[in-house]
Image 1 (tube, rainbow, N blue to C red):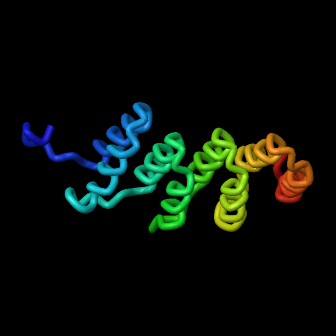
Image 2 (cartoon, helix red, strand yellow):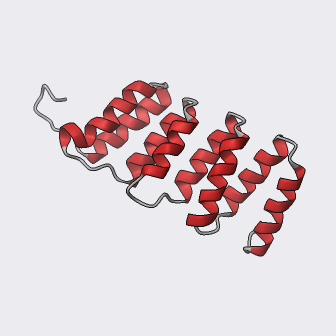
Length: 144
């Protein structure tokens, strides 16, 4: 693409990051993400951060993904937290799920899907008191 004289834009990078995610190319995706601004002057938007968090999470780099969430210059949304919680469930990372939950409860409006996902993570780990607490919080906050 570059040899043909085409400069990548923000949509190009969404495609590249998505392709890297589905091919399991974590290092390549990292390189593309960090070159966006440094090389091409394209400031990553929330969709780029979401793609990068998905890439890192699927690749098992959950702590790095969470660090990226915490360092984002924009407020993480429900989708970003849901992606990270889904990865915590897939990789059985209860400790990180708890940390994500703290941020989720502080910064994002109620999302029953994320509460349910976190409750399922606790259930899978046998943390029944936490399951009951999550379900009561869901009821208090208006979830199902």
